[in-house]
Image (cartoon, rainbow, N blue to C red):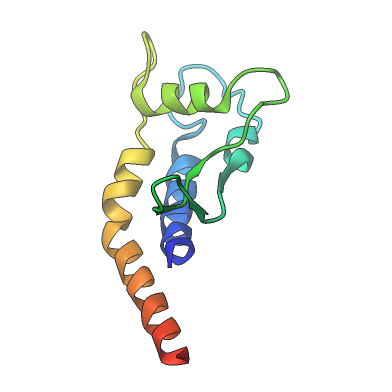
Length: 114
């Protein structure tokens, strides 16, 4: 179920990220596509409290030694002289209902198998 919901959210984040990278910049974009390629989702894991979790994030490190998480944070929140270009928060809010629907559908499919 978590993977089905995660795929929906991951797809929305990818779409939003590709929509903001290199767009509306004052100078020519130096984007290599590495940030977009590093975006991914973990397998379902059980934490020490018995909760099942799945994470969506960026693989590290970059080929240039910098951090993908840092670059994503700068894109999301901006910095001095660079306006914010949110892609994570809008993806979270806009994909919530679709994520829940995908998870419910997967649960129903699994229940029918029993």
